[in-house]
Length: 201
Image (cartoon, rainbow, N blue to C red; front, side):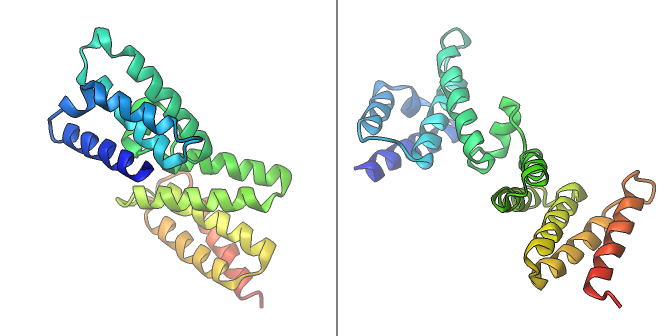
């Protein structure tokens, strides 16, 4: 049942993206949301679809009728973002002013530094990986941050693969950092320190 409802919502959202908003504006679309809610506690995938539907309705409706849909979309996307920023598409995060995976990962790293909780470090690593995937053009900040987080995990667990990947990422971030960038000297020192960990003698 849930799969059928989600497939129907997906089709309506896809048609909207192609320029046909009739499927997100008709009453049946909201009836699908009500039916979905009647199935019990929604999972993240269901909430993401409902949020997307309301955002599509906001885009399609005249401004004087769109406020409620925008408020619902914002509330749902904000809740999803709190659970995991990767559940919110990059363009929606930007539109709603929500934190990027890099910013969310930095927050998890600060929590890890304060509490020592490895689960916060694992969340940070996951978020930094998402940032690197989204920024394929080569912004070195996410690459460097992922390297730093992996090095911290190596220090906790001793897994050599983490150290090797951290060094590879550190070198890549350094290569993408312009010579006059204020962070370059610190990144050179960081890569040197990581290399010494691999070959302490």
